[in-house]
Image (cartoon, rainbow, N blue to C red; front, side, top):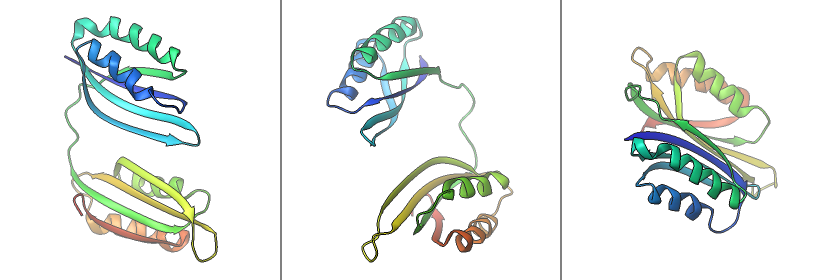
Length: 174
């Protein structure tokens, strides 16, 4: 079996997931993991599938055809055979006034202490009290040995004052 990572993006409409899933099923593939979203009228997805190695070339051809027929742009990359990531996991939640650059500042601070962002979900909404923007983020972090929770807390708290956000850090299942 071969892991393949797919990314798709195009104008959102019913049937896009079905178009991709049909091709995976027709080639005896297994849909392992995915992140799918509607963003600004566009459908965007990242999907990991497992396929029999002898079906890969036919799968790629069929998927390109199916995606073209529903106006999806497609990128296909072979899965990485590296060992599973190591280190403990933590979750960080940030909430505060929206402003340009929050993600750049937070991700840079985490990279500086060798913490990886495994998954990040962000959103903005209007605040009920003044109609301003409210930024919210949930980050699932992979922390290597030797980096303490306190080091992460300190790095993010230093930003919390600068960015005017509230921050919480906890175990992955919190």
